[in-house]
Length: 342
Image (cartoon, rainbow, N blue to C red; front, side, top):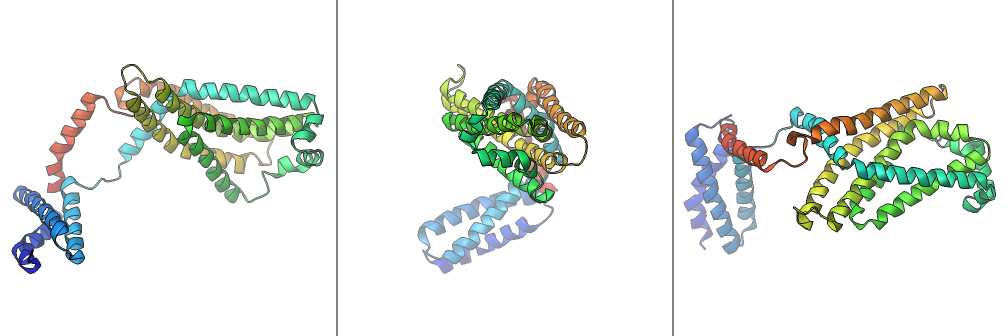
């Protein structure tokens, strides 16, 4: 290929394409011209990549083709309507569809944790086995309460947020393997049960429940949701619905899990603020527990009541119905030229 001759033959078209791509407004004729020049430039780029060793020209034309393509299809713009649809439809619907799973996880986790508390509290010698006698005394005297005031509240909140989000991500990502999720739940249930049992055995049950309840209700519910959604993904692989293939069932469960994962980022931010600012606040225990319980009940209403309504309509689903998807495609294709004319 004679590179100089090729550039001389098509350079004017490339310059015109660059000019049209940079314009804010195009009329109908210019839109047609832009599309035609884009198609030609894409063909030229393919020819240059296969025959020309000139990386500078290939890079320049690649950027031009990408810019023209973005101009044709339109750039996505942030939309408050999309945010509202996510918060009021997609997320609550995804939470509601998975509620049997995360409620089941919550029931099993709570039963195991309270059994461990009862066992450790009823057999004080086991506290020394689990944490050591000196460590148990230190935990009761100052360690448990001091944990919530060891760092400044903003730093503590950020640490809690990232830690809980990472734990939830592990539950969601490893859900299809089942065993890792069960192992993570066991570790956390063991920690809650043993610490609670030690505090109860030393007569400090009021301190334990007074400190863990304000934030623990919401925080643990977030973990239950993550684990339940992860296990739901595993079940979609183990026993997919009759009307879906195994791959399609796992893909749909995975999309729902992604929606839930985005929502849990906000949930853990709220629980971190509760733990950092409300749990150690110098106010009566009843006030702290009331604040935490109110936020927790608000989340349950959001997931179960609003979620039920959102899940009952196709507008609240995480995946559009075929007719809606087709309508969306028609709307996009019909509106592409209108976006160019703006």
